[in-house]
Length: 376
Image 1 (cartoon, rainbow, N blue to C red):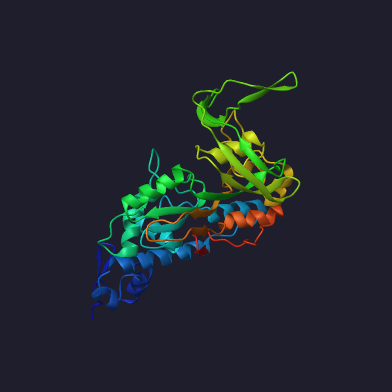
Image 2: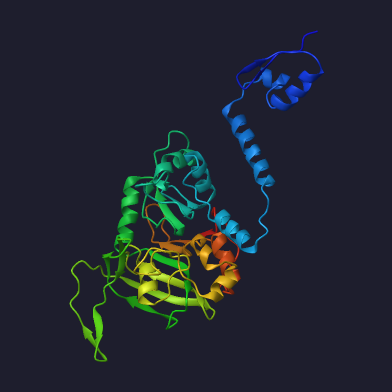
C-alpha cells in the first residue's frame, strides 16, 4: 500500500517502507498532518508559530557565565529598541503604556531609544505609528493622533498626544508660553553643589573641532572671571536663554538622583546644564560628558563597580533621563488641572538600587513599557 503524499517546503515526496517514516519525522513534521493539510496557515497562526520558535531559540541560548557579560546582556534587554519591530507591534506597546485618555488627549509613556520624528537612519518613529494607535483605540475610522511636543530619542516618560489638530495646537501653545509644569528625574555622575538651585546660563550650538568634527549644544555664559572678579560679557546673538531649576533627591559620594524643572525649552537643555553648568553629566550621556570627543562616558571606578561593569562596556549604559511628571492646565471639556506621573523604566530603577540611591516615594520598580500610574 502506498504511503500518503505530503508537500514539504515546496517539494513533493512520495514513498513506502520504514525509512520513509524517519524522513517525514525529520523533514515534514511541522507541516504534514491531517489538520495542517486541511486548514490554511493564516497570518495569525503563522505569527504565533514564529513567536513560539523564537521563544524556543531564546531558551536554548546559553547564559553567560561572566558577571560583566551578564550585566551587559541585562542592559541590552532592558533597553531593547523598538525601531526594528513592525509598526503594529510598536503601536500595541504604546497602547499598553497609556497613562491617561479622554476625549481630547492621549498620554503615553515614551519608551527608551525610540525617536519621536523620522530622519536619516531612522527606521521607525512614534509619528509613524500614530494612525495605527488611533485605530487601535477608536476603531478603523479614527483619524490619526497628533503630537503635542517632543522628547529626545533616549529620554523616557510622559508624552502628550491629541485627537484633534486644534487641540494639539492649544497644548503646543501651553508649552510655548510655559504654562505646562514639567519635572524630570536624572541620575548624575558626581553630586551637584549646591544641592538645590537654578542654572541660568544661555545655550548655543557650536562645532567641535578635531578628528571627529560634529556639532554640540554648550553653555554661553554671560559672565566670566577676570582677576578674581566676575565681569559681564557680551551675549552671543545666537545663544538661547535657558533656565533650569534642580534639586538633589538622593546622593552618594559619586552619584545623585536629581529632580529637574526646565523653565525654558532649549534643545538638550537639561543635559547641557548638568554637564557643562554643574559638572554633573547624566549617567549614560555619551555625547555631553566630554566636549572634545564623541566617545563612551568615562566613569569613576566606584560607579563602575556598583553597576557591575568595566569601562570598556560603558557604551552599553543608557541615558538615565526620565520625564517623570507633567501638569497640564484645564483644557477643552476638562475643567481641572491634569497631573500625570510616570513610573521609572526598569533599567533606571535597577541603577538606583545598584548605586544606593533612594527614590523619595520608593518608586523602585518600573517597566520599560509603561503601566499607568496616576491621572487625576
